[in-house]
Structures are given as structure tokens and as C-alpha cells.
Length: 217
Figure 1 (cartoon, rainbow, N blue to C red):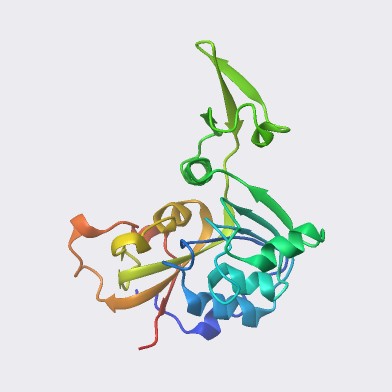
Figure 2 (cartoon, rainbow, N blue to C red):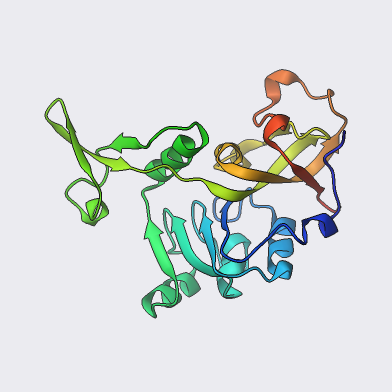
């Protein structure tokens, strides 16, 4: 059965107070049609998990500008002045997590782990309010797993069952967030028939994908 649906189908999926993971690196590998749909839904008080908050006119940045986000968990916000302004005014909560730590927390959430141990951040502000664990006389921070209600994924080549291939750097966080969310929506650059993809190319298995949106040409 095909998982390709219309944008109208997504209209009622987005709710206030949801946690949503969004793939992409400065907008590269971010599904802008899915961002459009989330903006049109009007859902607010969202917690957004992603690598960064992109730019004011791209990807996650558009949600920030539209005042739909109450909290961001990301590795950096420096390319979006609006994120910094809202944070400094106390209107947006920002949790900064080192990039490697962030993706490992997502991986832990996707694979049922209780967290990860990392030396990154020990002795800095990053360790504030976190448990420290000593292993072989070395201190580590216990970083807790991350999961989301919905993942918005951008795929290059997707079959109608949801098996997904990413081209080049568009892969970034996308495969990991697809494993760490209760519902997964893929925006596809190109859709092909189920079973037509080379199995060795598949990076996200269709079994975890719920809906596919075809990118307009």
C-alpha cells in the first residue's frame, strides 16, 4: 500500500505542545514543504529538535520567526539572529548541545538506550545540572536520550513504501531522527515504486515511515 498522501492529510497531525525533530544542516536536507504545512497548521508552543535554527527565511528558522516555538534543542543558533533575540528576551528557551552529543542523544532515543556517556563539556557550562559518572578514573557526562512525537524528514529518492535514500550531505540528521520519533513524515524529491530501489542503497527503512509527501516540480 502506498504511503504517499496529500498535504491535506497532514493538516490535523500537528498539535500544540508537540516535540518535533527536523532534519537538515542550515536548511540543507530540510523539507520546506513540510515546514510550510507545519506553519499553516498554526500549531504553537512547539519543542523543536534539530542541528540548528537555520536562517530567518529557511527551514526551522521560519518556525522561529512565526512564533510557533517555545523551546529549541540544537547545536548552534548563530546563523539566525531572531533565535538569539528571542532567547535574550526570555521568549524562547534554547538548550545548546554539542553537535556530536546531540546526534548521539537522538540515536540513543531511537535505539532504546538510557543515555550516553561523553567527556565533551566536562568542566564547562555544559555540565550544569547533569550527572557525572567516573569510568576508569575519567569523568563523563550522562546525556539523556531524545525522542519526538513527529520527525520531518527530507529524502532524495523514496519508494511508495517509504524506503528512503539520501544524496550527499542532505543525509545529515535525517536517518537518525526517523528512528527516534513516534510518527515519521518524509518529503520526497522523487518517488518510485516499492521494490524498485537497490536494497543496498536504502538508508531509512520504509517500516518506520508513516507518510510521504511528493515534492512539487
